[in-house]
Image (tube, rainbow, N blue to C red; front, side, top):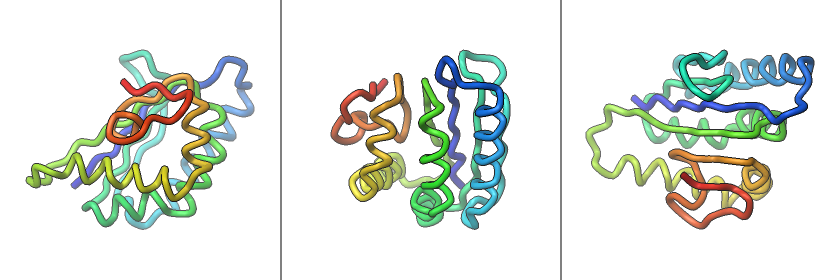
Length: 146
């Protein structure tokens, strides 16, 4: 199992209406992806982030399906322009010692194959974690890897 987790803060100036609409779209999109077996989207407590999401995916094949699903791409198009600071991380019980590198490769291919996602990510003030450009592949201009 892979628990894909994200935490984020919104850009200064994002209106309450934009926030409500963005989070509703995120919930709608995440619910449309069949490879996600369980999910939660909501406020993030106990840290520097405002919101977060956790998606449970059975295996790497499902993870890749999730990352490239049209609903996930739509979620990124709608949501990333509202995001200021973003972190992603994955927790897994997969015994394969290469699973982290395989997850990073899924993200690298996604950035290579879907350039507008790479452009959106490069516009974030900060982006760190398992999907961060520069940590496991070429850095994108404007994005900071942590």
